[in-house]
Length: 73
Figure 1 (cartoon, rainbow, N blue to C red):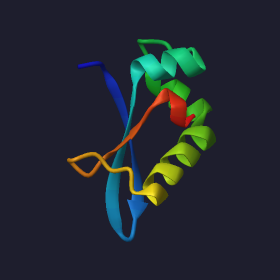
Figure 2: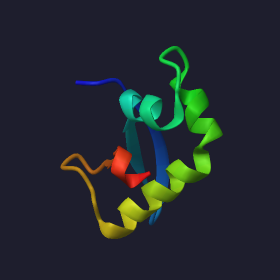
Figure 3: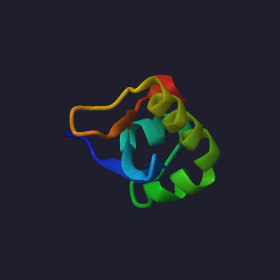
Figure 4: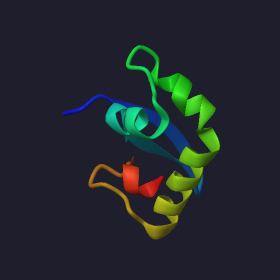
């Protein structure tokens, strides 16, 4: 399994984990492997918008998380 960065969203007073792979962060935002969260901070609005849309569509994984893929950004 690839390395993932995780951010949290609040949905109806519940925490939803939103995951994005390091590969997607590298491909889309040229993230470094040493500090992928820096890329999350720099592109926060884009990533949050993708997460919001996936949540609205109900695109939850079996574990209740959201997986943000390259096509979502």
